[in-house]
Length: 493
Image (spheres, rainbow, N blue to C red):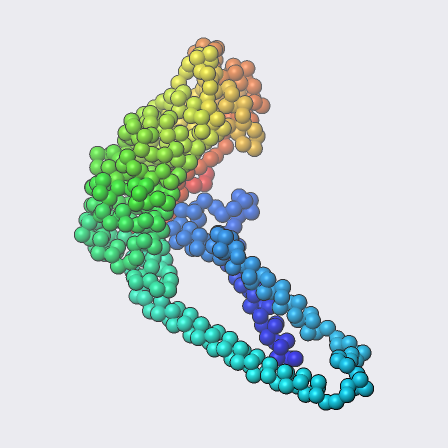
């Protein structure tokens, strides 16, 4: 009985660990990274390549990701319940009343029936023993097979360029989910002949994320199109000299790619290379971010190649006008912070899907002024960031946007701008009205400014600090930079 009890207890504990213990251990490792005030993990973590890949792989053990995964988990839950029920039966006190099984001895005419029962019982015992032995043998063989496969997978060589290597059974090459090409580490320039031999060391079909760093003369190799499971491609501190169509990102070769990042990266002529503007550009991509690049223009027909992405950042680039293609790409979140824009057309705010737009740290002095009757709609925009600009007044056509703001989530932020200086002066009694009232036609000036409605201005136009750059540049430099980089716009005020 004790042996049976220990076996059931061991089975219950193993199933319980498989269903809950492993999940608790994994989640505990992320406890210190979680920010309750933010309601999730800080954005800095989502730009850390190793943290992201670790979290995606480990969360698969916690969350149900497929029907087969759900069925396999149900098996462990059922096993736990069955083991607990058997434990209850085993520990339940035995009944005190003796039960008589079979006919009474007084009714038996001889010993022949008893002999038949004994013979049948004796014939069952060897059969049961043979079954138990066969089952035990199968389990032992299965255990040896699993151990052998695991040991064989563990003998795979480590690849220096692989920042996260996994060891699946039966793989012919080392399997890498996070692959880095660091030209500085290997004293390379970034030519095709430099990169291809390193990529050939791993199973290309298993790579989810590629990071190319510190390549002064990058010639993107055509083997990029062999990464069929590529989810993210990132360039850092790199000069792209050649990215031909033969190495382009395409929906045929990269059907699941979701993100592209180019940080401290220069492109030939300040224009997108053919590899980033293919007619077959992946429609699965939803996040495109450029930070500190020499990009100065986008193709006018880019909207016919790129999908309607959710997030598009063009920060610390060299745009001197608002690219017209962006109004047709219609992102949900758009940032052109720290460029060289001197004006913002009304069309930039009229995109039907645009929810968040930042033009911070641009030399914008005034927003385009049009009579209110000539502006039919300003779209679905709810947040406009104009920090670190020279804006001193707001046009009348922005009245609907200003009315969408709340104290908790104001609609227009103008921190460190002339308008915020005027707001403080009016609040302190140093001014009786805004200077624009004397110089701007009344049908072109925002109503709250005309009326000097300070409560409405406080709700719709705060002057509190808000970070200029959405891309976490400081964190990226800390993880990937060779030397400390200057911080143009600090993350905190």
